[in-house]
Image (tube, rainbow, N blue to C red; front, side):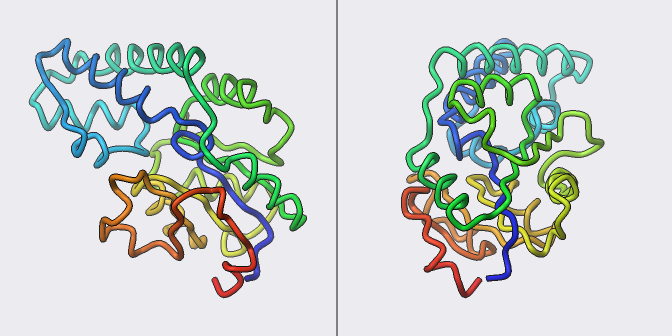
Length: 218
């Protein structure tokens, strides 16, 4: 495995924030009289909040003039919830330590705003763990567009083809693969057996079992 860097997603991979994002999103949509199913929510994980709102506003035929304020509401609610209730994902510390043992560069590529990145890294005591951090906050397009992964590889000064991405969402997996990276996915338990993950290079139940000996053939 010719890997020089491992690039982590953040939400749902390092911190158990997806239920909190889901709560913030569902509460906001309920203000417009719309309710999301869990399956619908899973289909849109990994999107930036602005694109998430645009997707569901179009789906539910909600007037787009309310979209910017709705996105701001979701971000504010999510940051408050994650700061108060967010917990590290199982195996997050193990995975980071295993990467460091392999002398690999570490990157973080997230759809979330930098204000949330700061909250999460401080909460998990990971402020000094990453060699580069890239956010899609101000990019023209977020995941599944690959730009945030390409930007992270550039910041690490390595080629994307020498990067391994760790992702929990379908949109994130597509972004990493479009950037020409290898991608290992760690889906939620209720979504683990879905055929959509077949595009990944490997699939794990938990970051706790990340083992570079087993990934040597990637």
